[in-house]
Length: 67
Image 1 (cartoon, rainbow, N blue to C red):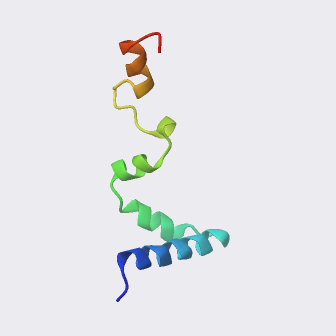
Image 2: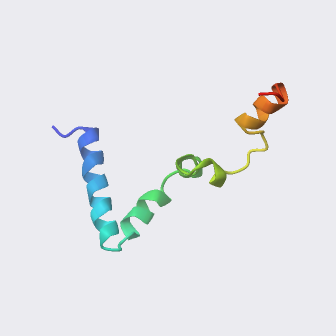
């Protein structure tokens, strides 16, 4: 029986093959169905939506400016 890990591996391999051939249509369709917070979570912090909260470095600096 195929596990979810096996299926994910097959999907990742297909995505790689599609991208090598310049085809991102299926990947776009797959990503379209993910909630926005999942998409943002994948991106580096500088692309994440500003939630109005200070980042961790700012929090530490506010707590101890000498750190």
